[in-house]
Length: 147
Image (cartoon, rainbow, N blue to C red):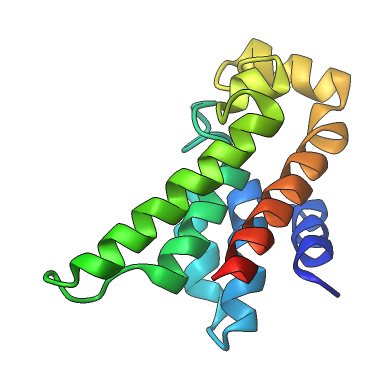
């Protein structure tokens, strides 16, 4: 299974978008999935269910940080590369969707009970979120392949 298929499978199993995007990469790089499931869970639903930055976007940004983030405070080259790649990911996602905001991508504010009910009634989590995850992974895989 490729990253996109793994990500969608995790989402359909009940994990949030950020977990679904991050965990396949962590596992691919030989890392234990549990800490990454815990870390990414806080970013689901547009960061803590606030319908802000899309969880798929947050998950992809975490992957970039996991791969290219700095581990020494004076490693300015790694810091710059990480930030450049994050900006490029966000640019490409915005080029595709016009936004990285969950409530704008879904067309409803899921941070409210009313918004949650509308999203469930319209089946947005089943119809829109898997595509948002797939596209995040496509963009991410493209950026990683270019490095």
